[in-house]
Structures are given as structure tokens and as C-alpha cells.
Length: 442
Image (cartoon, rainbow, N blue to C red):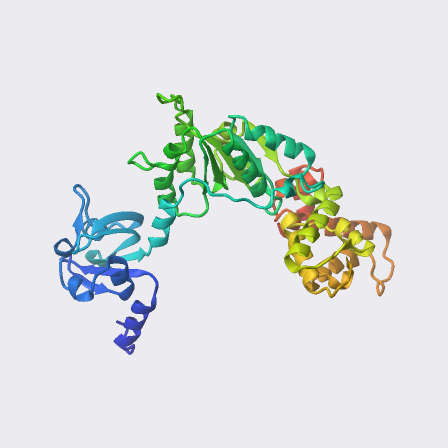
């Protein structure tokens, strides 16, 4: 311990952290064991302290304690999943970092930092059959909410056996389209399943999908539709494993049920950007995109804004017991000129916040709009009308306008150069040149 710092400081840190800490000396005996570790392993400190690990814990045949492995090899082990049993015979599952403790070149012990994975274990067991009640699906058929061609393609995809990939920016409603397809698929199949690829650590996600006991999600969903949300969040090794599984010859069982699930996948990132950034295997993309649906952002379909507003006003009229008829002409103009970077989700929030401050008015007026939204709109429109600024030369003004517009395009596309260049109808190289020319941050 550092000279001058009381031992109680270290003890307080040990016992207040939410990470389990277990340390052994060069003989494999426990010398540190904090309260979180007691909670994780269901042990008391006297059960463990000053005892060799193998006297206290039991490991399956062929397996050993990661603490003892690191003590022997002197090599750290990161993100290791371990299953063993305490002195009561209770099964313990952990994910840990295990590090050697050295003095010079000599290993004098090992320390393990353990995550409480109880919630992950529960999530891994609770993936079962999809219980989607779904959002208000009349939204899908309300004029202007989604383009007609997207709705028609979604209906056809629901009753086909082709894999489906649904892409779109955050807030565009790709989850709604995916759930619609999944629910419609239930009518012609044994059921449907879903799993978010961003909700579990990789080590548990692999167990959920490819359980060694034959009860993994891919096996359970045979003959059904399986929704994999944000599939690009799978690690590349897991994507490769999934691709190999899907490409193996599928043989129906004796009841004629296909041995493979039909994959429905979603991505809130452009798949070609994900491939370029090595977040998505190109081969997996082609395997899961037999039917590909792209849900366009609101800024690409301004005619849909009126329908979006009408739907959410109707929805919140019911929630708040109100009778709002629509939005004023001024607000219509604001909504039509706004780029809606948050898409449908942002529109829903703006309508809800506006209606919460209304008092028997029939229409949403500008002063009802949330302050943060009004400020954002003002900043975007104030650039063109600057009352206290002298008229500048046209060429200078056009350059300033170009700089401002490119900066906005980058912001709307979260500084993704490929998407911004596509929206601006210019090449990546041209956009990168202008970014350098104007000194913009990308």
C-alpha cells in the first residue's frame, strides 16, 4: 500500500465497486476477496480467505481456474467466460479479466476482475418466442407515414421465404416495418423469434445463437422467421459463423419443417458503409438481403410530413383527452423546411411536447413548439436573414452559403462522408476536397 494512505481507504474502494475482485498469492491462496465477489459467488469471506482455490471451488473436467492459469503462465486473460461451482454445489457463471501480479520478472500472484452477469444470463434464457404486441400498426397504413412502395414490399416479404434486410436511419421506423413483417409471417408459419444483436455481450450472444446443447436460437427458430435487430453489431467472427450456418445445406425434418430459420435483419447504418468500415461481411450482406428494403428519411419525402403530424396529433388527442385539429400554416412551413434529422421519432416527440403545453387551442402554433426546437430552427433560418449585417459580395456570400450547407449535410448524416456526399449529389473525393478547402471538421 502507498505510504501514508490508511488501509481503510483501499477497503472502502474494494467494497464499494460493482466489480468482483478476487486475488491469490503465488501458492494459489486467496488474499483479497471483496463484497461484490461474495455476492456473485454466494460465499462468505471466511469460506475463501487464505484457502487454495481448488479447496473451495469445483471445475468441470478438463477446465481450470483462470486465476491459476494466469498464475502459471504469467499471461493475462481478457473477457473470459467461466463456469464453476461454489462449496454448496451452486453453479456460477462469470465473465472476467484475469491479470498476473509481478515483482520484476517474477509472478507473485494473480487478480481477477469479475462482472456480475446475472442479468445477461437471464436475457440469454428469455429470448424465446417473440411476444410482440407491436406498435399501433394502423400507422403503417396511414397515408404518408411510410411510402406506398415500402408498404407493398413489406406485405410481399411477410409471406415469402426469402431473407429480408431492412435499412434506414435511426428514427425512420425500420423497427416498425420489421415487426409488421414478423407479425404477418406468424400467420403462415409456426411462429417467429427475435433477438437484438446489441443487447448482449458477444460471449452470451454466441451462446444464445449457437448453444452447444442444440437449443440455440437458430435451432429453435427452424421453420420460422427470426428477426435479428442491428445485425452489424455482431462481431465479424460471429457474422462468419452465422454465414457458415446459413449456407450449410438445409434439410427438412420428418415433418417437412425447414432446418433453417428465415432471417429478417435490420440495420440503422448504410450496409455499404458498414462493409467499407469492416463492420459487416460482404458475403453475409448478400446472403441476408434477398429482399432489401430501405426506409427513406423524412427529409427525402417531405410530402409525408403532413401525414406524420396528423397521425401523432390523433394519437395524443386520445392519450391526453384533447381535441387538437392540426397545425397552423406557420408551423406547416417550419415543419416542411426542417430537415428532421431524428425522422419520425423526432416528429412524434415534437408533437407530444407541443400538445402538452396547449390549453384548449385547436391548432399547434409556433409558440407551442418546444424551445429547443424553435432555437434550432431559428439557427438554421437566421443564416439567410441577418438584419444587422451589411450585404457582402455575391461570390463571398455563395462560398459562405456553400460552407454552411455542407456543414449541415455532414451534421445530418452524423459526419458520414459517404452518406453526405450521396445526399449532396457529389463524389466522396469532391466532398473531401471541399471539407479541406473550408476547414470543416469531419
